[in-house]
Length: 110
Image 1 (cartoon, helix red, strand yellow):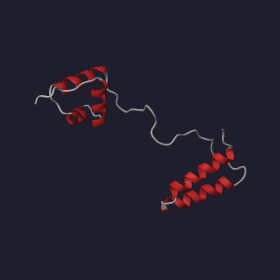
Image 2: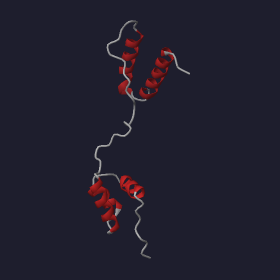
Image 3: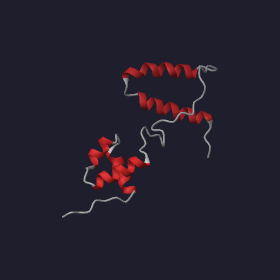
Image 4: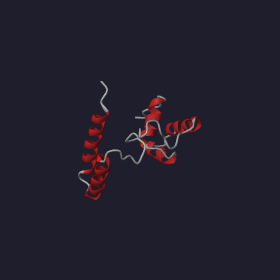
C-alpha cells in the first residue's frame, strides 16, 4: 500500500516534533520551520531522499587481505584481540568478526 504525500508529510512532522520536543534550543527553529511549511507555495529547497542513521556498508578503514593474514597470524601467536584492535585501528568486535569469519581459534592450552 502506497501512502499519499500528505500522509507522508504528516508522518514526517510528527517525527520532527518527537525529536525536537525535549530540546529547548531547537523548539524555536522547529516553530519557524513549521510556519514556513504551512505557507502555500513556499519551497526554498529541493525534496531530499536523505536517510537517517548510518550509511549501510560505509567503512572508514578496510583491512587488506594481507592485513587480515597478519592479524590472524599475530592472534595465533598469542596477541590479544584488544591489542590487535588497537594495532590495526579497528574495533574489538571487528577483530572478533574477522577471526570468526575465518574460523580461527587458539588451541586451548589447559
